[in-house]
Image (cartoon, rainbow, N blue to C red; front, top):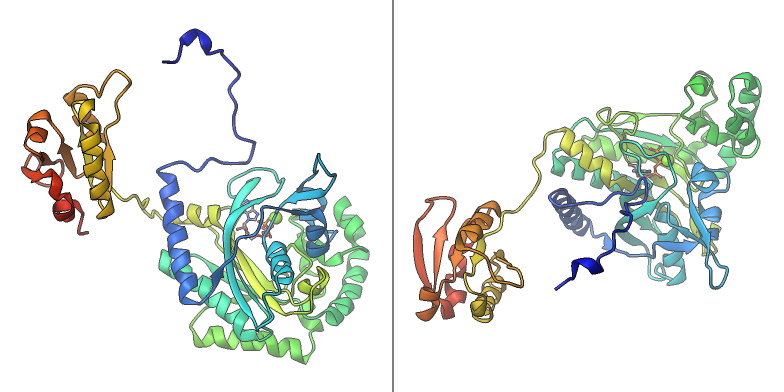
Length: 437
Ligand code: ATP
Ligand code: MG
């Protein structure tokens, strides 16, 4: 017994701003999506990887680039109190995956196709589709330089939208070329923006000479005109870079996947080269990118590994689920098969042994739980059984138990119909409780 006087009133605690509890029945949507993704990854031979949520801060500073939104202002970074290590809650997972691949020499025997799911952390202004803890599902193919793997990843994401029944998702593509091509473009960009310093905001002015490509990623409406008129990286591409993009698009064409080339698509991290892409929808307001990725052939070197080409994408789980909801997809909630009504607590040992057998056979069963004073009235137990959505009530009454039996009563189709089953033969009649749908 908990003594009332012992419970002191304390201030209520709530979740950290921008970080969400994912509750039932909403969590059923998450599980359903995760299940679909796992099966999809399996079909494309991508293997699961799980890296730590905390990484050394240097990984992101080096990997993502010092002059990026994430590193400049969005990271949850802190010093370990015990040893002073600089740590950061991962804002994305590509850098961590690459670190793990290098650390464990996963590419010794050729390329590796990997996928992950999990929470990411960015200190942004919370709004619809933008949270401080959010979730990504990502796929990375490391050790492959050919454009066919870029295309494979895009086809895989496209197949996912189709399987989920998502419409209104458009694919945008661009090429960021190679470092040499980028530096020519960079000079042209600086010259262009220098002629329009008057419309640049403070951040853009500061970044102009540090990382001018970042200006193209600005969401400042006042700057959109001058961004629109900026020299396009596509015009600076050499033959090899152009051929890479054409290989990707020809595979997409052959697969009937529509796309548009967006010469202003640059992505938020510095690690990208050649192919970059985003899947966008107009149905989620300004947070319309549901999945984004590209090639990052220089990241392994940047974090101390042997050079290895790579390409990947990450999708925002919250945004994908929001879009599904927006399109009226029903929540994927599996009903339970049976609710166990137990009038007398003394019967629990026998009852629970029977329920264990049913569950071994795959039956979903919820047992009535009472209080320390008892199990409660039959009437109140039936009310719970009805509220649970179960298709059957299992009535473990004294009369039934005395004969080694249990009454199975239908709560849904053919309400009220009931049969008696032998307790010890639960493994045999278990199947009759399971939905065939
Ligand atoms: P945005 O331009 O919307 O800030 P981003 O370029 O920073 O996106 P990425 O780092 O490419 O996003 O992450 C991949 C995907 O993860 C995004 O397309 C989006 O769906 C999702 N995502 C990114 N940041 C958030 C966030 N703060 N909250 C929810 N989802 C997010
Ligand atoms: Mg962002």
